[in-house]
Image (cartoon, rainbow over all chains, first blue to last red; front, top):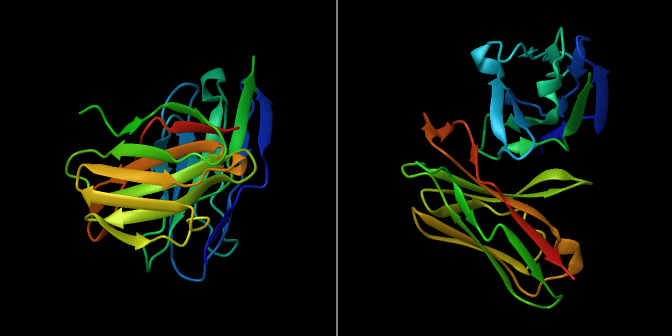
Length: 109
Length: 116
């Protein structure tokens, strides 16, 4: 069965510093990978998906099939980036969207 | 559209009581997911439906949990009897069909359950 691992429960950086939220997955096929974000008092929402290959709010994520990783990066963190981030995987042979345990990012002024 | 609507937003109950959580998905969405969020495990998939049919309920913890989707606009998650370890935030999410697979998931605001 597929599994998504986010090794850091908490991550704290200063404003303007680079940030990387790690996501590793275990799945033998070719999955779709996503990052979802939950800001304070807001709903969980899609941030980006690997097939779109786009940058959202300055965040990018590259799927590395060799390392089975999909790390989320931003070169200069902002205070408004403080939120809970979830990595998610959709297998190619079923529709079980699985999430990691989440990483709470705090960007300090 | 008001998005995915969940009720109740908060529920406090005593161990042994029946709990029913409700979800109204976004109109036209083909997929509906129930997730449970805890500090320790993050978001766990409990069950999902495609066109009102349960597809995978392997994430349902035990027989005390059951879910139904009687029509395209309503789903329930029932816990009977409830236990303190069921305390969590329960999320419902719906998704349009992206080809033959779910697209982006749209989440409700969640139902926070506390079992004393």
